Length: 161
Image 1 (tube, rainbow, N blue to C red):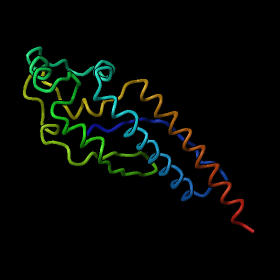
Image 2 (image 1 turned 45 degrees about the horizontal axis):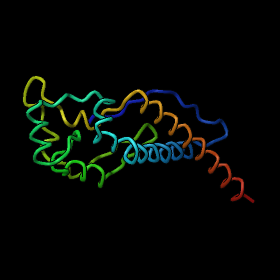
Image 3 (image 1 turned 90 degrees about the vertical axis):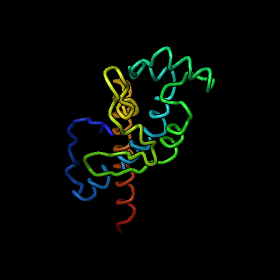
């Protein structure tokens, strides 16, 4: 799996405890990971996604055979096993520093290295993100951090007393 790497600095509010801040970041990263799995990953299985993520073009022979046998020309889909497995199962591992989305039950050919020059590296294609996706994920993370800070402040305000 290719990790999504976004580097930035988030300053902890001065009045907040470090443990509370870590929990806010973990929850925010988890929500961002769920967003990627629900909204960005499915785009990889569309023709528009193939263009957006600069996927390696398949040979004309392959595409012709795929359309004849399966009746479609969708990228990363032949029988549909990869698409079903990737969109069905997810396992989020979060920390205050980020999130890793583990896709379980993928067919073995996804994890293999490309067969030769010009062959697609399917796991890299499956996890690519575009610049637009990167910007959207940063906005989602920021929104989630703000939401979780506000939620934390509300619960702290009402729980004391």
